[in-house]
Image (tube, rainbow, N blue to C red):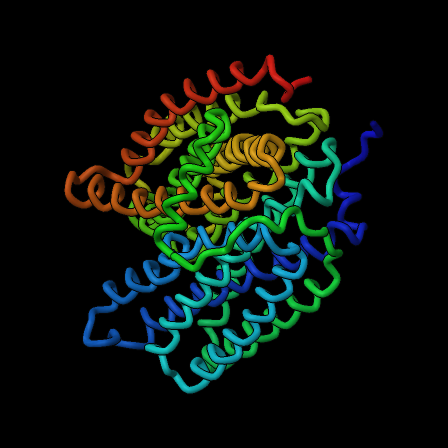
Length: 432
């Protein structure tokens, strides 16, 4: 088979419109979520008689709740209906949601914005299974790792840009109105891209789509567990989201408390982490030589542990006030940045081969439902990550660097698990 760079996919219709669609969706999700949270934090005194902190936690809960309620139905629909049609309908729904959100932002109706956050989560729930299930149908086997690398990079870069855009907009006088225009424009652009996604054809017409929210989500777990290597790969990816959520959640307090940094330091930490993930994701195609193999995964896990431990020792004991310029010029802080970039690179090496493995090892008739199960477990692990942070940092009084160290040590057990998984499947078709 001919070996070409993954970037050539960005010039082909079978991939580029889908890539732009998922990029715009991830950007818009994060622009809307972060803008809403900042508006609540700085321009209101709380909603429904609740404190600002409670409302912010409620907002996070409302966005993630649909993954538990509707993932089963979303997976069934993505396995039953033609995937390009689902993408277009989901993006059309996003325009409707964002049109109402724009009106609510313009009028300052924050209570309504929380409800719309639930609808945005629902829209993301139905897009998720299609996002990864469509790739094996439009890419060759030797393109699957590269395509997943591009999708992973695009998702995290969109998260970064959406977060930064929300922060920049909040510094302007007409923040809410500009955000209203921004989210609506991005939704329209996403739909325009979705219109160009080629049809993939339907896999089966025998699957019944049942509207039983919680029950169908629960039944997904049985589908995901049918092949043990696939289930272990799902759990490994969900662990990365646990780890990533823990890092991202603590960056603001870490920058302020342990680096004595201003808001530019938070942005720099987030940027370095995501740049690292993007680099790691792009490296996977070359390292795997275009094959579906788990070979990079244990090395990624090893790096997550070693660099996480080094980050603990890299944090200055008595930090002075710092800005982004301090972090890139002072050798003491440069070590912190190098560790964060390295952790991101290892994260990319860890998850991209696992996604490609799951897509390759699952039958087309069940692939979307298994991806939906992965999304449910990801959401569960991120909730547990938040609870773990509250317990370890709040109740146990552990420092943030100590929390990162603890996560890195726990990751050592994940390293053992993925090493065993890699060798278990090494003699099967994955490496043949």
